[in-house]
Image (cartoon, rainbow, N blue to C red; front, top):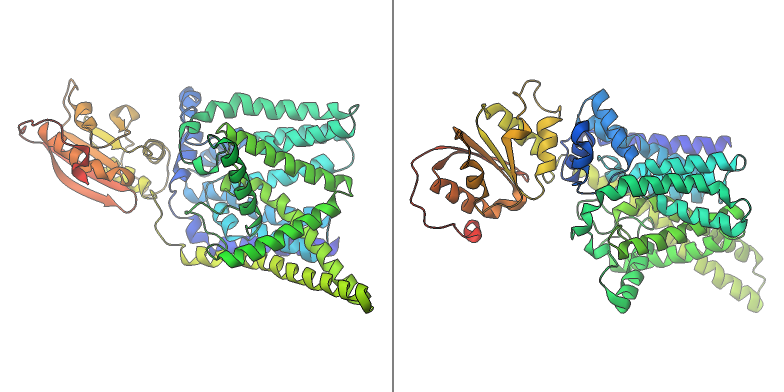
Length: 539
């Protein structure tokens, strides 16, 4: 136990040291979907529920509450939001993964698994951003520990169910765990009922309210929906292979904005390590099924994967090796770590027990095969943790839409009562409102926050929406402040031409790298209208 605690402490210290080294990254402005999450969490109570319906991605009640409390107590600063909602959980994940694996295998495989998970470049990348994935992975380990630990089963299962309010995908684990109780002993399976009720209530009442993203095409590559029978089988097989080929297994392999392991992009290396991982997981499954808690781990993993696949058929949840499924990575890695321990033991047995003849040759073959698989498995934590070097080199790089708060500060400096503020871009609204209404980053006195009632949001640029928004006003504004998100800049020229036809001239332009452009327009003589310009005019 003392040795385990020392190793766990070393892992926690290593995780904290990595975060300290990357403090510049943690302190950078929020970017992309990081901007959306605090907006919905910090929305005023009278409009909170209605605004939540338009969330770009669903969040759990617990993660929203944690984000809101952090912002209200420590201030709506990027460093505070990232540290509390993600950063503090990275060392917890390292310790929890190691101690969970130690239930089934030796110190070295368990430590390797913890490094592959918590010190993976992909996980550290998520753990230094305002995203719930690291916390969800910790909750998965906590649910498994509560469900399989002896004593007070009703109370522990109820607590596990309550954790579903903190982790959005926890329901995928809780359902197979409850089914496993029913299969083992029907007379005592009722003890899982409170957990199921809590998880189902959270999912049906809170999460389903945020399902507008089903209409988005962002996760189409991870959805089973619309593929047909043969296409669905091919999709499922491809995703299973992608899960096994990850370092560690199940880690995201698709998001271009995340740092990945050294294996990505090297086909032969990925095949070799993926094959070794598959063998290790088979060996681990063979060992785990002999134990009650090990069988529970296997059952929960298989059930969770099947439920995710079914949910992807309804466009509710992506399936496969993608970032929302990080919550299963520690459990998958534990299975591989157990298998690695078994392969190491098999290699030692057959090397020592070889006595010549057919049996001896067979032992040497098994030993050699085990050593080869172990070499592939040993590469997993090394290749996974090597991604930290990429994070270090890129710690000062500008990321998409991270200048949104600066853009709102610029508007606050220029805005005068009566001005018209127009924000254009399909993804601009939530980030703009966070920067304008909540963010405490930037100068201490940048100017008054522009009221939401003075701002018009356009989902498309280049269709004359800005001029139509200004024209019907009873008291025409003296100026128009038009911000165009970088992703929608193609229509900027057409939008400005329409405004020029309505008597608005561009007097100043300010650019924000990878974020957008702010245009200041003043009154000028109306030009002759020649019909609306083509949206392609700005291309």
